[in-house]
Image 1: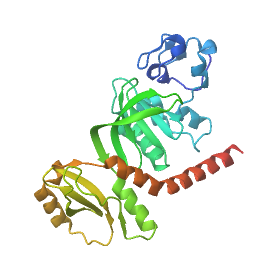
Image 2: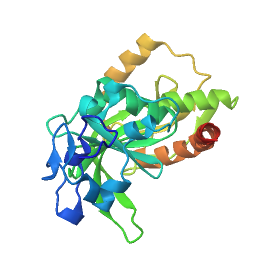
Image 3: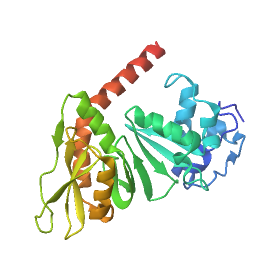
Length: 276
């Protein structure tokens, strides 16, 4: 076997599918000497020849300084690889939440902080977690279309909204005090109860149909957090269905897009300067 610069890491030999040799995702390749390397390294499939995970890319000078050993895939139990502006984070079988903690989470946070999106989960699993600056949500990963793009469909599962803090920060930077994104009523009856405040965000709701939706952000409102929490519990909003989430996220992305593009442009310029 030839030294392939990966050290004893052979994580990619397990998580990816390799159609050339009929290898399914999530199973060890029959040509892999686990912890040592590829037994057919000189004749390995072209997909393997072209592949370079994020950690290995950093060891070759990409993304500034080399990533530390704790972030090596066999140690953090996550293999990160790029797909356009998204990084696929495949966890080693047996460690489905490796991207949520330790070194794996550090890599996710760094990528998201630099404007990338992350799609994390087990190899071959139809449901994964999509992470960006606004949220973490479960999505169904469909088959690629005729252009090679993969369709992601929200499953309605776990949803952790980080959108409000980022948009409030952006609103302040733009010198605005209020931003309104949805003035509509309940889709079932047209009613619009409220408003109710959650931090700087303003919500309307329909008590009859137990749905809530984000109306916008108001930085002029003086928030009494104790009263706010009491009112929120009194109304029972925590148990209401959050509707029109996708529409508001699309608007939020537009607000953030210019700033994200600038950060990525700065990063690319840094990489170009390093290469030269």
